[in-house]
Image (tube, rainbow, N blue to C red):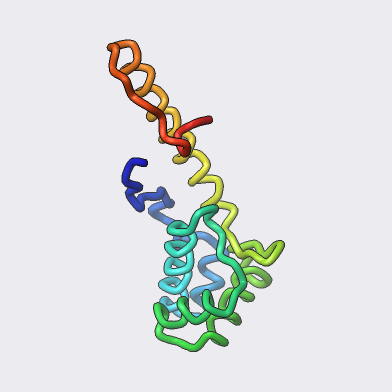
Length: 134
């Protein structure tokens, strides 16, 4: 499997979103930093969704330099008050991140498949990895 660069797109002006303004009003710019810590953690996980296990809150608390209870409250506010995340079936996720990653994953899959086809046409014996199969 190819190395996964931890790249994802996001709007350069995300800080101007009304939901983010509300978050910053309540939590200050520290809340904006916390928001991006959560998004980056979602990006690093297969499926791009955080589960509601206590170890996730503990890990985020360590990264955010706060308590697990503060993380729980922050995430609850991001779901219920700011509509930045969705909580469903024991997971918390960002619809925006899922949409962006679906596009990126599809582009990568298409590029990989095009490379395999090119190599096959050139007579190279390349075997697709199971993750590369559609």
